[in-house]
Length: 74
Image 1: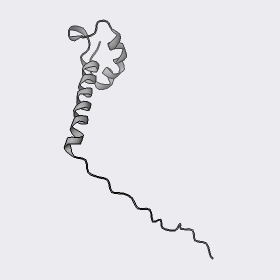
Image 2: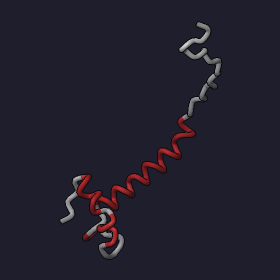
Image 3: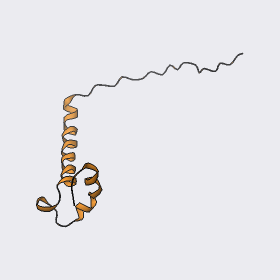
Image 4: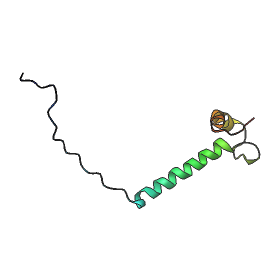
């Protein structure tokens, strides 16, 4: 038999990935953290006396998320 079922080993060289420093990650981590806090506020507390936006529009947009995360809304 002249043919083999196994493929020939490849000689592809994978380049090394440079490590990330804390100075590179910190701005993105702060941005994502602030974004998550704003999202948590709108899902969990944007209604009633603490409402920043008048009306029920925000409540209706995040209604299912409130139930999913266990926030009471009724």
